[in-house]
Amino acid sequence: MTQSATMDIQVVENVQKVNDEVAEMNRRDLRRNQVVCVNLMGSPGCGKTALLEQTLQALSGKMAVGVLTGDLTTTRDAERLARHTHHVAQINTGRGCHLEAHQVRQGIGHFELKDLDLLIIENVGNLICPVSWDLGQDVRVGMFSVSEGDDKPAKHPYIVLASDVVVLNKTDLFPYVPFDTGRFKQDLTNIRDDVELIEMSTTSGAGLDRWIAWIHSLRNTV
Ligand SMILES: Nc1nc2c(ncn2[C@@H]2O[C@H](COP(=O)(O)OP(=O)(O)OP(=O)(O)O)[C@@H](O)[C@H]2O)c(=O)[nH]1
Ligand SMILES: [Mg+2]
Image (cartoon, rainbow, N blue to C red; front, top):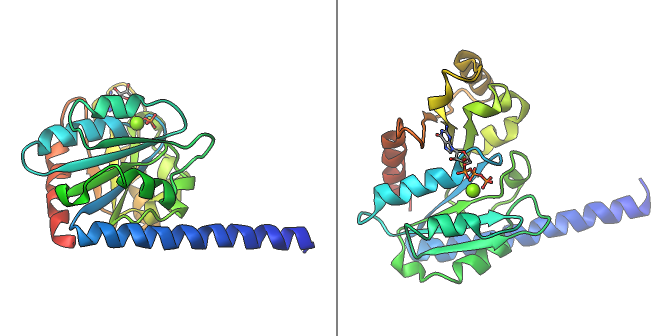
């Protein structure tokens, strides 16, 4: 190995180490304030913001929910979510394909954590990069959608391995898009036989009750 390759590896390891330390600081602050934190990961357009919109509506008056939303550019997701909560902040990553713990730390600086019960972080739309970066969350959700095709878990096993729950969104599109549900589920089970799958459509509302029940069950985790 060349000296420069060794140095590159060292730099990457240092960046990860610093990230993990900041993630632990986030986790500690969130726990101290009894805020449950969800890191929502999935590909661009799978319906992460749509799910957050539905979640905020369903939990209105029941839980105080803060939302951090990550994108390369624009504040469009934050604008959509601001219709449902004033605890919302957008993080723009520039060319970054994932959120890092220091960005979340800056983001939560905008909130009074003691006023929140739940913080949901919408990661940058990407099935690969967000998996490797601890943000200080309690649980991670891996989101797929019917229009992406049934082969995505098999092609992206690491997001399945990293997630506490897998969501399959856009089930209202089953009649219009070729999608082999049996193959999708078999691939999930091949990767992890204890995987919990929630099928839903944020458009029709099907399956959202299971998702909301899962969110409520998290209150016992911190
Ligand atoms: N048919 C259908 N469309 C949906 C569903 N959920 C979301 N969409 C649509 O899918 C598109 C993308 O939804 P978003 O919520 O913006 O997806 P996202 O994952 O937040 O996208 P990025 O933030 O860009 O990664 C929008 O046009 C939504 O209306 C669903 O359950 N069924
Ligand atoms: Mg979004």
